[in-house]
Image 1: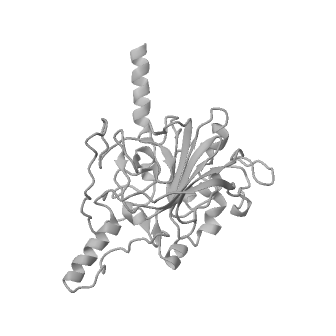
Image 2: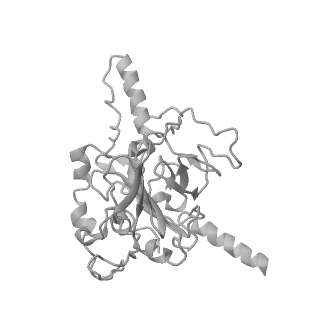
Image 3: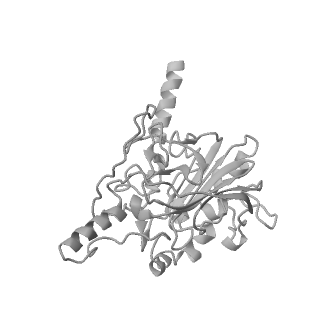
Length: 339
């Protein structure tokens, strides 16, 4: 009987790994970047971190020490496609996870509440080939449950947390590329503060915060409000006949005891799909030949995600069609089986 149950569980997990979203094709590489100089420390415990690691154990320690889930191969998958098999990229990788690429994190703000810890900020999409300009990757939602109840991606977890919810994409704030990872740590409140049933509402609804602020810092916040409760005291569940507009979302909880942090130190991590590095290489090579730099390369994103008017135009249809659901990520995720 035990053998039968074990085989059924394995079959269920194998099936769950195939449950993901469906989004547009990943951006075509304009050029291939040279792999950086990073190598795992000789003292790293096994399984060692690696550029091709498949570990999914995340952590959130501070504004310059955390992990995010992203596609294992962003030349073939976008963020929605990778909901079933995303892997952890960490600033200080361990346990088979991958190192975070240099230049990817533009800003980060760590929030510590009584019931959760959270990291939010902005990123440079070109470093991970996650779209830019007129073609932003609107992103996906990863959480502890997924369609099969074993996580999306399967087996992913945050150290010290009961469950988690991550958003990452370029449409929640037009022209910005933002991320949010909340890990709920209290057995009694995690269901209210990390409610995965709001997966289509986006990070501005589920994790309101100071996404557009520059820099890196660690702060404390007071926040015990369930995701279901709106500022006017009414209750909203995703799927209700009326969806609140962004103006009716909860505001970011006030921060206190903030401590400024340094940005993550460069560690020589460059993946071959890094279009920011590829453009620099291509531009330098073209310049040395007397040619025009970047004439055939897709422009790398700036620290704000994309160049002003282009990024805004790309998301211009969002307020009418998507922001009522929290982000255009909602549209990109309609095919995702995240219950």
